[in-house]
Length: 352
Image (cartoon, rainbow, N blue to C red; front, top):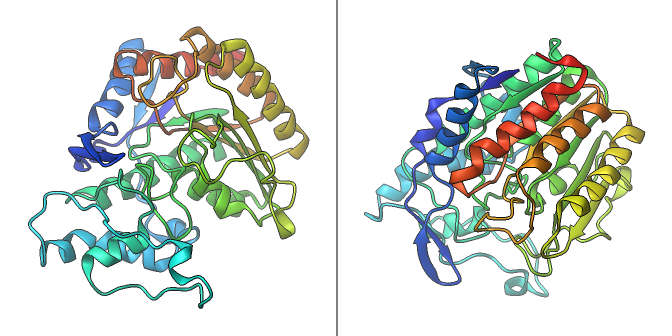
């Protein structure tokens, strides 16, 4: 199986994450991608490819120009006013601030104000290499998509930073650009057909949902922890089903605490049935391993063997798949769990 990986992910190496008012060690760090890569290299059945540069056009097809410009220039502007080693917002626009007024607030000119204007949480810092790493993660996703569009049945993009929380004009949730959404829109434009996104991360992919919520040509199906208890809290409920031309193309299955392998596979079958009915040209899989029972950011009870079965079932149901890495934070087993998913997918129809 072809695997796309870029060393440029190491440029994004933040130290901290602020949760509940507490400064913690950052969970989304370079060791995640390196751990996965090591497991795949040691296996010997995976071919590691470098990404090709696709430029900004595919990103511009999905994200607001202002967000792209901000992320590109943020660190330089920040350094002109602050010596802090990482950029975190301290004021984030809440709808209540402009209740009864025009809902569209102007972007501030102050760097700290601009930071809150584009970021929706306190866990997604910007450091000197963030933009370069985020650009590279997009190229990883697009190169994996190219492999599948050119004939591979399945390819894996080892994306870091992850992407599914980044919306059209917002970043957050450890995500800066939405790798899966950019690859999905790219595949639509390349094939002229429909594309499905199957989101298997523990957390709801609020960004991917928002980007395609009113579009008929992309199906978004997500299995995730119930947002009444889990980040991002405000999206991912079952009654969110799309709007306008996209009505009926968004499907969310909120899942309970302690979910077992069997329960997860049952939910996955519902997702795969929807994907099959939609009949996409290509399926994008947002693969989160924070569903694992020992993951510090999750509360499911999944074990390693289920990932191979998930990979097998996905590839038994879809014609072509681009698998892109999202979350997963328990490093001792992260690489093996990803490897198991890919081996399960590889086993279908004798993929080599």
